[in-house]
Image (cartoon, rainbow, N blue to C red):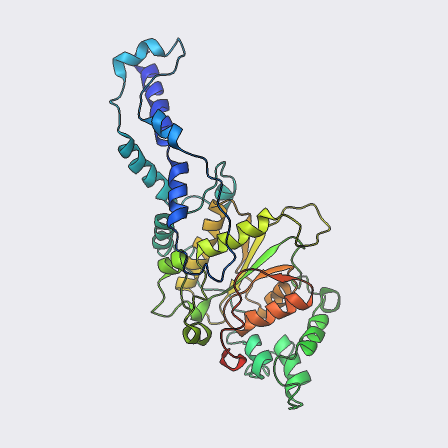
Length: 378
C-alpha cells in the first residue's frame, strides 16, 4: 500500500515539473517565427505572455507538498532532482510533438491553446503526408472548369459542356458582344449572374452566404502548390512563392505562412465587432475555402491545408473548412458575399475580393492586386 501511494505522488511531481515550461517555450517560439512578410502584413502588437521565472524556480526544487498524508512517505521513494535545463528540453519535446490522433474537435477543446511551434508544423507536414485519409484527391465536379479565366479574359473552354454554369452565362452576356468595354472582368455582369444563382431563384441549397461575423480564407490549391519547387514545411513556417506568374514575377510569397494568418486573425478578432456589422450574437469563426480544378493536383495541397487548419485550431482560432464541395460556382458565390475576406493568389481570388468590397465587406491582410498587371493574372 505504501509503494502504491509513493508512485502516485511521483507521478504528480513529474507532471508538475513538465508543465512548468510550455508557457515559456511558447513565448520563445513566437519570438523566433519568420517575419519575412511583416512589412506588408497586418501584425499583432506585443502578446501578453506571462513570465515563467517563478515557475522555473519552482521546477528546480523538489519541495514536497505540505499535505500531512503524503509528506512522511516522500523521503523513502523521492526521485532524483532534475536540472531545469533537462526539464526545459523535455518540455520542448512535448510542445513540439504533433499528435496525429487528435481531431479538430480535440484541438478546439484545448484548455490552454498555443501557437504551433516550427517543429510542430514540420512534424505535422511529415506525418500527414503519409496519411491516406488526408492525402486524397479533391472532388472535382467539372474538370478543367476555369470560371476566373472566363471572367478575366473570356477564356471559357468548357462553356459548351457546362451550359448552366456561371462561365456559360458570362460568355453569353459579356464575351459574345466583343465590345471592348464588356470583354474582361465586367463586375456589373458578374453581379447580375450572382443574382441569377441566388438560392431563391436557383432552388439550390448549396448557394449560401457566410454568416456576417465569419472570416473567410480563400486557399488556391492544386497546381500552384504541386510544383516540385514547393516545400510544404517551408510554406507553413515561412510562406512561399506559388507556382504562379503573379508570385514569380513579383517575387513575393503569395502562399501565406501559418504565422501570417495567425497575426491577421488574432489582430482582427481582438478588435471584436467594431469593424463589421452582425445581427447575431454568434461568435466569430474562420472558414477556409479551397479546392483544385485538376483532379491529379492534390498531394502537397492537402497537407498544407490540413496543417494550416490544425495549426489555427491549436492556437485557439475557431476554424472550419470547405474543401470537399468541388463546385467552383458555389464557392465563388459563397466567398464573394463574405464580410471579411483573406485573398489568395490569382485572378479568381482577386475577383472575389473586389466583389466582397462591392458588397460592403473588407479585405484582411496583404493584398496582391498591385503586384502585377491584370494581363499577368493568367
